[in-house]
Amino acid sequence: MTIFHPIAEKDVTRAIVSSFLRQLEDYTESDVIIVGGGPSGLMAGKELGIKGVKVLIVERNNYLGGGFWIGGYFMNKLTIRAPAQQVLEELGVPYEKASEGLYTADAPHACASLIASACDVGVKFLSLTLLEDVILREDNRMAGVVVNWSPIAHLPREIAALDPVPLESKVVIDATGHDASVVKKLEQRGLIKTKGEGALWIAGSEDAVVEHTGEVYPGLVVCGMAVATIYGLPRMGPTFGGMLLSGKRAAEVVAQILQKVAA
Ligand code: 48H
Image (cartoon, rainbow, N blue to C red; front, side):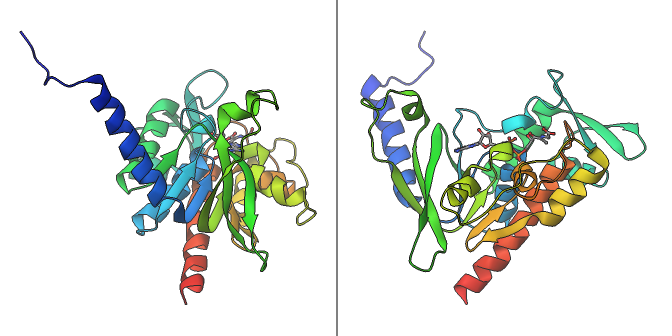
């Protein structure tokens, strides 16, 4: 008995190649490119997608989610401080009260739901794609990013002397976590100075990250742990409310910038 419709191997290859290339061609120009598909980047993407903004997330790994899959240590649980459990409610992720104002959730459930919610509002992804540089025009406004396939970075120079691919956008978000990879491209050119993240201090960390989330250079908004790296703010260990609310804040800031650009 045959269950499945008969097809040839070339049909499978053609389906993937043509679908991918159509999308890549469309996303050579986006409203917003988010570098980094961790909790802050996914959250920013989801919020912008809800507003109808055309968003591309560039992620160097072959999986999305960054540090959100694992949560704390190797234990697949994450913590969230009030009021950020509201985000879990929005995502439909169950959570438990651990103590006053502190909640736990299953990290894979929260991560999978956040990824799905970004997909649901039309966010597109380029996985296995590494940020190599940024585009700066004569007005010194960031106008997009330059990317390459991640494996290229692990090949010897003589094999991997491949020119990277420029992708344009009106705004770029650096959501690359501790690395602050986009901001570091500006620092290399003396255009910005990072302080390096501070020591762990949970009580003081998350408000500071959300508060400092914003535009750090014309056309570049920073969210998540990258904010701590720029401003020398304390880290917060495996507690993720600050990342989610920083992503939300970044989306608000970007929406304002897009309005100005359009006017
Ligand atoms: C393409 C890149 C590049 C690059 C990095 O680390 P993340 O989970 O980042 P956040 O800021 O959304 O969340 C931070 C959180 O996971 C965390 O580490 C916390 C709360 N730590 C506290 C503490 O005390 O340690 O995700 C960043 C993503 C990852 O998926 C990277 O692979 C990706 O960005 N990325 N993608 N090109 N150059 N650099």
